[in-house]
Amino acid sequence: MKKNRGRFIVLEGLDGSGTTTQTRHLAKWLEDQNLTVKKTFEPTDGPVGKLIRNVLSRKPVSSDSNTPASFSEDALCLLFAADRIEHSHQIREWQAGGRDVVCDRYVHSSIAYQSLGPSISAERVVETNRGVAVPDLTIFLDIPVEACLERLQGRNESPSVYEKKNILAQIHRNYLKTAALYAEHFGPIYTVDGSRSVAEVTEAIKVIVGKLRKGVSR
Ligand code: TYD
Image 1 (spheres, helix red, strand yellow):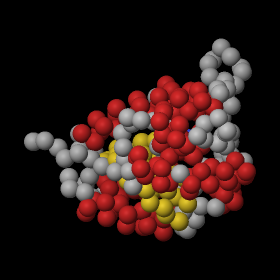
Image 2 (cartoon, protein in one colour; image 1 turned 30 degrees about the vertical axis):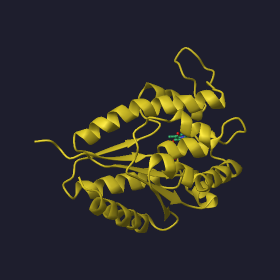
Image 3 (cartoon, helix red, strand yellow; image 1 turned 180 degrees about the vertical axis):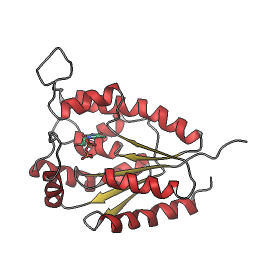
């Protein structure tokens, strides 16, 4: 018997906004309803994603070098897109196999983060990402920059190049400013107030995903 196509749901937001925690809670909630779910994330843990993570945390990219790798903004934008194109093949397979896919970050991250500098416009990022799997739903966890920074301070990880107040503030503006452009190319996007408790945010996400499940014939 042919399996129904799984849905593809993305969680987006600033560093520290809670996308990783909420991806986990959403996947668990779907699993509790006997759905098969694939939880995933970007940058991926594939070869390109690993390279990107090393670059973002200023780590050397190979064992025979102590020099942190750095890339120009446009090369980095292409790396994120290459990682996503590979990921998209997997996402489509998971969906075809009837699994719901819940992804921590996707194209809107590229639009908001890679268009920080003057050389790359949001439209160019959209262009670079043409042909990737299109989500059924994207949820943006909106949270003030100050709250993100407070949460990030409590973490035990090497900070990424973006974790500075003025940079996060610009990324936040980019997310809001490019929501319509994103929706035009990558499907519906909803905003959830991410500054509430974890449980309250999870509830808000469940309401939105619940509506999608009723509305989409499978
Ligand atoms: P990650 O470990 O996922 O951060 P967090 O758990 O806080 O979300 O690191 C991903 C970093 O990569 C994050 O700073 C955002 C950035 N990023 C981009 O700049 N462009 C992209 O397309 C993606 C997917 C992530």
